Image (cartoon, rainbow, N blue to C red; front, side, top):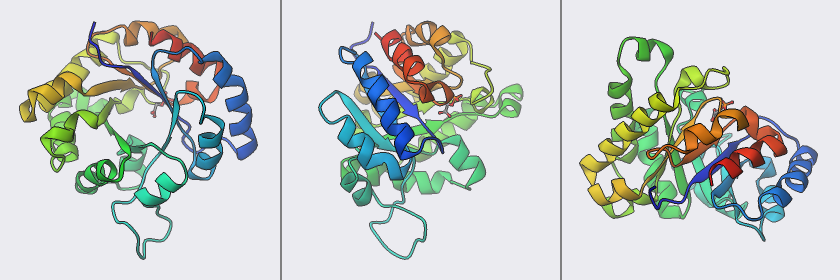
Length: 251
Ligand code: PGA
């Protein structure tokens, strides 16, 4: 067993109005008062202050699903790290595959965003992962190397351990197809070896999560693996009982 504290994060994507977010908190929070894992909820930007307020006495942190790397400026529709902090966020998801695939997020943008998040006081949750075709072509390691090398390239070694990485194979996201615990552990172990190439101490401490169709039925098996330090959960995080069960499975 590693002594890394697991992180279990709820990625709500474009779901939940303010009323629905309130209802979730009312039903979820009493179930996780004794949780051993660090719990993160990533609601829409608009629900950040509400969820931050609802969770302020517990051990739950609130995260945004994206941010811009500039402090301010003419970037219509974007938000800065300072704005997220103002809204109560403590962390930010960066490079989710939906951002990469649907909104043209690039490795270069992520190379800028990750250190800006850290410098601003937000814990970056950097997402990486391959498509089904890339896995079939045996390119998983190459893709992960490219995404990790870019994402952490401008993070100083002494702050590397503060980054959280989420390995999310794109073929497993929202498809009901989960990576086997062996596939997930292999990929997370490979990500750790990439971090070790920069700094071995950071590699021991960095938390590497698995994401992709995590649900109560498979959570214990995935989260029990040595190399897997938690989960980034989409669909199953929308239900307070399911998400609480996944948090509990993390130990
Ligand atoms: P899923 O989404 O759990 O619905 O597969 C995971 C994610 O996109 O982070």
